[in-house]
Amino acid sequence: MSGEIDPRELLGLDRMVHEPARLLILTILAGAKRVEFTFLEKLSGLSKGNLSSHMSKLEAAGLIKINKRFRGKRPLTELSITLAGRKALDDYRNQLAAVMQALPPSQPTSKRG
Image (cartoon, rainbow, N blue to C red; front, side):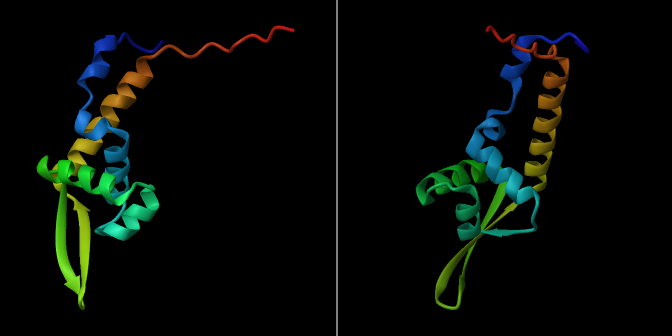
């Protein structure tokens, strides 16, 4: 074990970022300047409703920006991660890495035979 850890450290993880669908959205957005909703929907595998719900929560928290406009006569929704979103994702990554680093190595399981 590389260091002592209080298991309660896991309770301090940012739940806005820690939720798997939101973590996926933030991770995808962190790799691009801006992403179209349809691209994010296809890449994430989330339903439109589920994706929209998580987008709303992330936008309300200030972690992403949603821009709605028209391309010709068709609506276009684009998303981008904010500076606060990048910081939240980096903080989450660092905190989770510290927790994982402090865990003891897993023990191999023995085979009975």
